Length: 273
Image 1 (cartoon, helix red, strand yellow):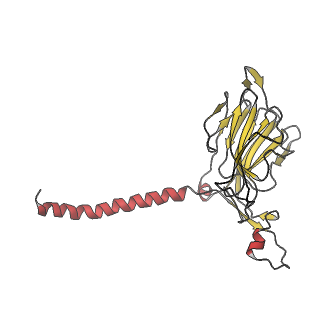
Image 2 (cartoon, rainbow, N blue to C red):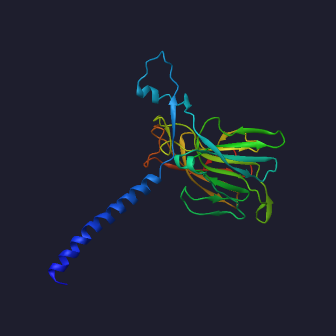
């Protein structure tokens, strides 16, 4: 190819290259925009007769009322306790205003630990798992009393919900049935920034089979990171980071502790490390 021909081809390719580059940038931006961090915005309840500045308002994190959220029930979750069913309640997003959303829940026949990431599902004998994204509450229905109640009286960000497995499960070849629920959630604006998101502390709770009697298993000044299962002792290990500086938000340099509790009868966890 002579220099003249090469110059003509270059002129043709130049705008094409710019177009391809622009499309790549647009696609990249589109992907970034589509992966939106889940969060809930809270309103502070403040006495109108009192002059309160922003700092004082944000410090009132134990006295908050939530803005009304659009939400929808997504699934009736079949638990291993015949009279008890759960309903997953999700925050409605712009995309879901146009189409119905879905969540997934999994039946476990065997237990397994998939790694140390909090984004992985961890299955344990007798317990199935729902991992939430924009899951803001869970309702419990009792067929015996024909009664529905919410596990939380306000919207939260549920990250993991363990419930009695629908299919009969076993441990050491012996049938096992759990009669409770476990949940990790961002349930408060712990850092006082008027948002509930991953910058807050993630707490871990126990609920009875009736969806009541909520008990916090991991100390409130810790944020839950991940869990592991010990089949020999039938216990759950929970790795949690201590909020040493009391700013209500996890920091990389703060120490990580390990807690454990028995899955036979969950109660306030004991510290192992």
